[in-house]
Amino acid sequence: MVYDLELNSVGKTYPDGTVAVSDFDLQVEKGEFVAFLGPSGCGKSTTLRMIAGFEDITNGDVMMMGQNVTHLPPEKRPTSMIFQNYALFPHMSVRENVAFGLDVKGMPKVEKNRKVDRILDMFDLEQFADRKADMLSGGQRQRIALARGLVVEPEILLLDEPLGALDANLRRIIQNELKLLQRELGITFIFVTHAQSEALGLSDRVVVMSNGVVEQVSSPKDLYRRPNTPFVADFIGSNTLIEGTPKGASSAGFGLIDTPYGVLKGVGKGDETMAVVPAEAFRISPQGTPDEISLSGTLSSRQLIGSVGHLKVRLDQGGDDVSVEISADRDDVRALVPGAPVTLGVDPTSITLIHT
Image (cartoon, rainbow, N blue to C red; front, side, top):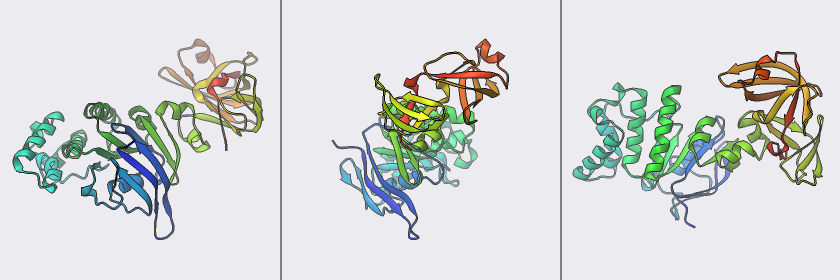
């Protein structure tokens, strides 16, 4: 199969020996929306720049549509890149900014104008065409950057935290527009972000990185429900991580792990050493309520935000604090006060067992 983008053991090591990216492998199909997610300094932007050709590769190969582009300059690759700061030219008009990539390609004026007019219309920018880019709002400048990136009709659009400078409301609006645009055009998007909500809400697959290493590549649903590593379990969502020793598998096919809170069972083979429990998987009830898996403790804090209750429970064994997310509309939840003894029940199908 020929992929739009294929990274084969791609790595970047700086002259001082610092490893920025280590043996990155990835295959991206045509029209996929893939997000690179991770904390600052994890290597996601460096990887994007290597794909674009702005950063030299120490080892490995970058393939696009079956062609090895590892040593091609950026302008020879079928990509276009959008930066967090938009990288617009303040002395140029909106039209001139959008047309810049076509000018670099030496496109004839008539064809260039036709393409620019069409993309300005698509982004509702025609009325601003003759204004200087720095006279417009953040949302308008974001649309200009997108228009400039797409007018050259790239096979792959690379986006390096393009929404980071926008306020929360505008960010949500542009997120929705971005996803609709990607579906409409069918272009492959590679999107770098440190915001979990963007990665999980926009992409078809998410690549989670830490210290230059790929921790997991999954659909947003699988990434959230079934983390593969302690880093992902701690980084994505709000999970409780409980270490223990393997106890094999149950007759029902669940893995078993012996923990300070007793033997827990969850989705695994039975040779894992950590149980991951999402905050929303806990059921909370007065202490002593029976459940298949029960943990007893004391409510230490309660915060109700809209329809969601964010609770902290201090477990009796070991004194660890556990995060619980539950419907705030329940009368029994609203009646709970800090200091109340409670029982946390968990469905074992919600528990993921992983290796530490």
